[in-house]
Length: 203
Image (tube, rainbow, N blue to C red; front, side, top):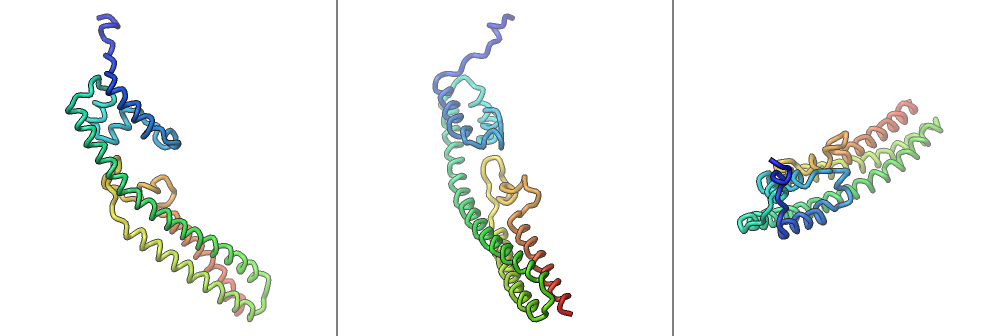
């Protein structure tokens, strides 16, 4: 059989337009190549399911049945993103709040920790310890708030990550599951180390 006989037919205009529109929207986000780098068929299969994704990516005709299936899948993906967006916005607000508190606690803690190591005066060390205790309280409150936020999340089911929690989806590539909470705990450990120094130095 000649090469001409085995050549795949070109997709009709309507199906080609669907692929181009998908490329120009879903696959055109700035982070697509670094985060996903999927082929059209791979990405469509994740978005719409293997059967429909393959038909759209490799087929030659946009039949009425295929069009209806694509329309339903697209509307479903839109609704799922509509559900996800508020959750992402709440997560961003939670992270910004945690970051603000953590930056303040770390800054104050570093200053007080340095001051504690520059004196042997028991009275001054007691005052420093009292201030460190306030920072520790702020850190505990931030940690509790963050934990409540994490535990209150519902499982987000949307294209490609059905049944996967939002935490896993967002932070799967991080070294820890809950990086903001881990940073708060690290700050708490530092504050407590400074407080132990104050306690030991006043004995």
